[in-house]
View 1: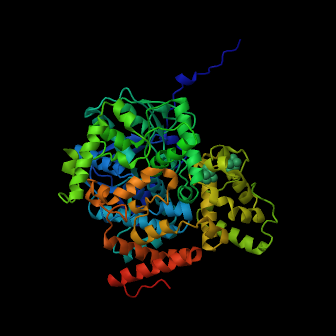
View 2: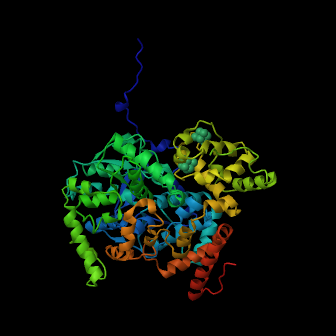
View 3: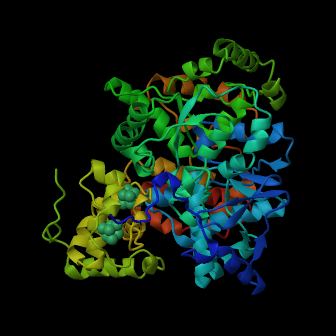
Length: 395
Length: 235
Ligand code: SF4
Ligand code: SF4
C-alpha cells in the first residue's frame, strides 16, 4: 500500500508569505510617487497597531487622531452604529474628530447609477482626505462601500498619471493639496485592533451568546489583499474581521454555508428593486444562518448589510420564512459589552427586527432602559432640553 | 420571462452604433484590468447573487465582451447590466476578470449615451442622486417615509413620526439633522459643486433626467452665486 503524505484539513496550516504575494505593495508606489513630487502622503499617526492582511503584509491601524469619515446610511438610518463608534473612542479617552467638513463618498451613486466619472469620484475622495489632513487627523472610514471605493480610487490614482493630473488641478482650484493616505482604514479594523482593550473593560458576559458573521463584500472582495486576515481565525482562509472581535468578547461564532454570499443590498435594488434584496437577504442569508447555526444575533460591519439583513426580515415574516434574527454592527456589540446604553448609545429603536430576547439573554432589563431613553426624549419634547448630550448618554 | 439574447432584438439600432458604444467601453482606462479572456467555467455565476434571481449571468457578459459580439453586447447593455448588484463576488474569477467592473463600465457608457433603457432603470432613483449632488450626503433620515418603504413595516411609521425628537436624542452633535446624515458645512458643499462643475458630471445627469438636472442647476447656481462664484453656470 502506498502512503501519500496527505495532511488532514485540520492539520494543514496556511502561512501567508508577503515575498510571494501575487500583487505589488501599493504603499511602495505611493511613497515613490511622493518622492517624485506627485503628492503628499498622509502618514498613519502614532500610536498604531499592525495587523496582517491577506498576503501577510502588515497594515497600520491608527488608534488615535482619527478623522471619522461617517457613513450617510449609518448616520441617516441606523445612527446607533456611528454613535457606538464614537462612544468607544470616548470610553477610552482617545483623541478623535467628528467632522462637518465631510461629504458622502459618491460610491453609492457610482455602483448604483453610474452617474459619475472617475475624476469626480477621485476628487470627492481626495477633498475628504485633504480636509482630514488639514486639521491634523487621519481618515477612518465608517462605511464598507466607501472603504472599498476609496481603495479603488487610490489604486487608480497610483496607476493613472492623467487622473492624478486632473485631480491635482481640481484640488488647486479648491485651494487644497493632492494628498493620499498611507493606508485606507475601515473602522471595523480599528475595533479589531482595540479588541483586547475592549475585552479588558467588558462588563457584560457574552459567553452564552452564539453569533453568525456576515462580512461586507466591499470590505474583502474589492482590493482583497488589503483586508485583515489572521491565522487564528478561519486559518487565514477568510477575513478575520468581525469574527476576531466577537471571539475576543467570548462570543461563540457559528459558521454557515453561505458566508461568502452578499447581503442582497444591490445599491440600485435596495431602492428600486427591493424584491431582489428581500428575497436574497432572507433566503440566502438569514434562513441559512437560522437553519445551520440558530444564532442569537448576526453581526456585520457595513451600512448596507445591517440595513438589508435587518429590514428585509419584516416581509420574510409575512411569507412564513424563518426570520427574527437581530442584526447589529460590531461597534454596537462591542459598546454593549462595555456597558453602553442599548437605546441612548446603541439606538436599537432604529433597528427593525426584534432584539429584546437577545438583550434579555444578556441580563439587560430592556424595559427599564427604554424608560430611561423615553425620559430623555420627554425632556426634549417638553423643551426642558434641546438635545441629549454625551453626558446624558453616559450617565 | 427569459432574457432574449437573439441578435435581432435590437435590429432597429445599426451595427455601427452598437460598435461605437462598445468602442467607448473598450476605451475606458479600466478596461485592460477587467478582462483577460474567459474559461466559461461559471465560477462567477456560482457566486453571483443576481444570477440566482434574474435571468442574468456574469459569464455571458464576460463571454460577449471577450468575443466582441457587438449585437449581444448591445442587448446586454440594454437590459442585463442593471440586474447586477455590484457586490464583486465575481472577482473570484480564475482568469482575474471582473465581470462586475465590466458591467460598471458598460453602465457608465449607457448613461453617458442616454440609452432609453438606462433612463428606465434609473426611474425613481432621482431623489438619491439629488441628495448627494445637492446636499453632500447621499442618505438622509427624512428618506425614511412609510410610502417609500412599505415592506419594512410599521417600524418606519414609528421612526418618521418621531423623527425630529429621535434625531435630537442622538449624542453626537453633528447628527441632529433630518435632511442630511450629518451637518455638512456650507464651504464643503460649495467645494462639492465646484467638483461637479469641473468634472462635467452634470452632463451625465442631464442625459438621464432633464427635470432633475434643472432642479439641481437652480439649487447649485443660487448657492454658488451667494458664495461669490457668480461666473459659474452649468450651461
Ligand atoms: S458584481 Fe454583479 S455580476 Fe459580479 S457577482 Fe456581484 S451581482 Fe454578480
Ligand atoms: S469566472 Fe471568469 S473565466 Fe470563469 S466564466 Fe466567469 S468570467 Fe469566465
